Image 1 (spheres, rainbow, N blue to C red):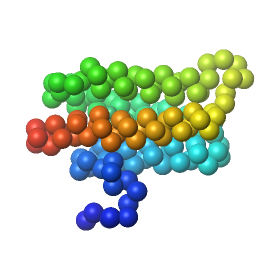
Image 2: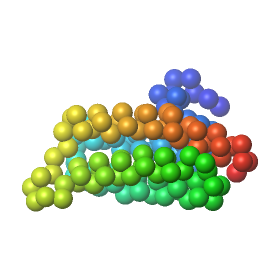
Image 3: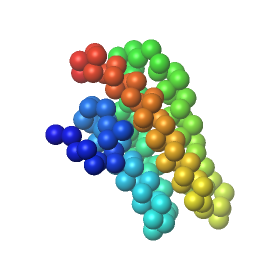
Length: 127
Ligand SMILES: [Fe+2]
Ligand SMILES: [Fe+2]
């Protein structure tokens, strides 16, 4: 049953595993926004994003998804942003409010658009 008040509604594509992972990604962004345990939050985001992107990337490969290359480029862009925020340089660890806004916005645009296209394709392929 669809919950009309669910803030995730615009980002749900009726592909259960992917929707569940997207929901979790937004929760991780929300914990970054709260600013508590930022280091562990960014590290959880990093590993969860990797897990999620691998799921989508394996599906795209299996289904020979036509927009795969462009989709992968978007994933890599997010991966490098998160890796950068984890801080390569000693003492450089800082997640600014604008960086967190960027992550949320990226997720909204990617999940609302790029992933929507993939999920439509998955449903059409009947898996
Ligand atoms: Fe994606
Ligand atoms: Fe996704």
